Image 1 (spheres, rainbow, N blue to C red):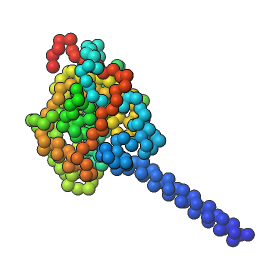
Image 2 (tube, rainbow, N blue to C red):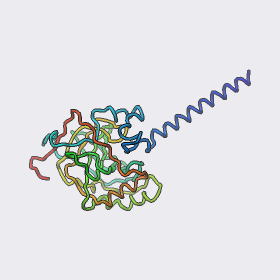
Image 3 (cartoon, rainbow, N blue to C red):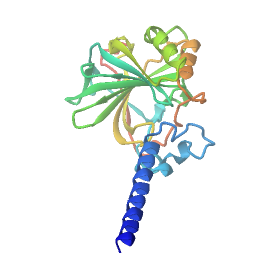
Image 4 (tube, helix red, strand yellow):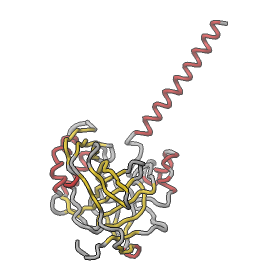
Length: 274
């Protein structure tokens, strides 16, 4: 009986180990940055994101998904939203290659924005090429997203779009770090103190709507602020951003999503300056 008991015990632990190993592998796959693709012909492309994991289903069935097209006919001009209040300051940062984009992640202390009396702390910024949002159907060459969170995990994102033209001063400053991470297989690089105030807005006008994250899990109820002014970037800077990413994709922009019954406001100061 002792021998049979030992065999049963051994089988029990073998089964338990197999289950544990399987769960660890699954956990790694969930966090795998290659789990989804921007290739619209791929089985893991944007049209299928909601099928990959149960917690990603909003990507397919959500009614407040981003990005959207900000068409003049559906935009309401308002002045009550008030000027966007930014209180950024220099802080330690890390440049991270997430496999589908390049991200600067700030430690604590990079400042915040204020929306409706709530403080949203700046967490990170990342780039999409081409732009994800469009204006009257026009897609631009690049878009940067500045991601902010409150202490209770509400999220607000500021988007700035770019067209080909003069160099962007912030990306000029980041060129050495981007090229350094592109030339290695490293996925993180500590880059010291980075001042988010160097990311120029150039306009007080902005679009405001409620949407979602533009990557899985496509979480909704995100406050989006899209700066109206289209800034400029060189073609070389766009290429540098894409080359730094360790994948073979030429783009990382989600297709425009249905707006459904949402409202889009365009804040314009009463004095109509900028």
